[in-house]
Picture 1 (tube, rainbow, N blue to C red):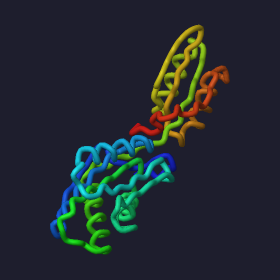
Picture 2: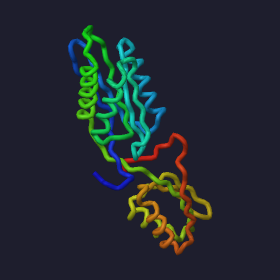
Picture 3: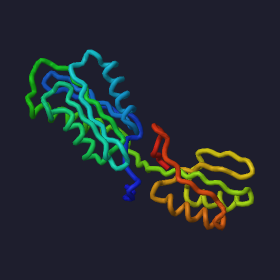
Picture 4: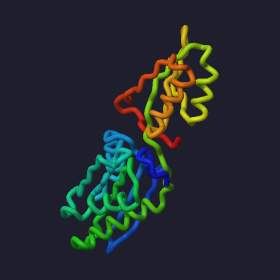
Length: 216
């Protein structure tokens, strides 16, 4: 895995796993998400689809640094469901991920230890079934330059592996670029050098709810 501070791992797509413990059935489902509303929407869909279940316990961790998280036991004894699910996510080294474990009670109480093990094993099974991908936190730059600088600017963009997200043209060219956050300052300096300081370069703040990461 890339060890720079803008690289992190998540699941490429949804994953699920099932298991039974003393009559209780457990279904774990996980999905990559980038926002809290996205995580809550996934949880809502699971609850709606499996409305007959006894519990829908979950955890999610968000952000390229994994600094936002939430967990919920949904009526199970405190610490027996949400915490084991979050621990499984953390042990796998993942973020931008929501994982829900749904339980149908089978008539036999599992006890605090048994519940925690069942939720942990289900969560671990889901993550083992999923495909892991490395994503990168992004910076967005707005670059404006005269048309005679198009060739050197495009050469720099290609060399750095930046992506042109938006473009418009008038007497100048205006490009919105996406680049790995750890390379944004280096790209800015290279563009300024290639245009002899003539390019206007502004670092943009991500729009609310916009994707801030990509498998560049």
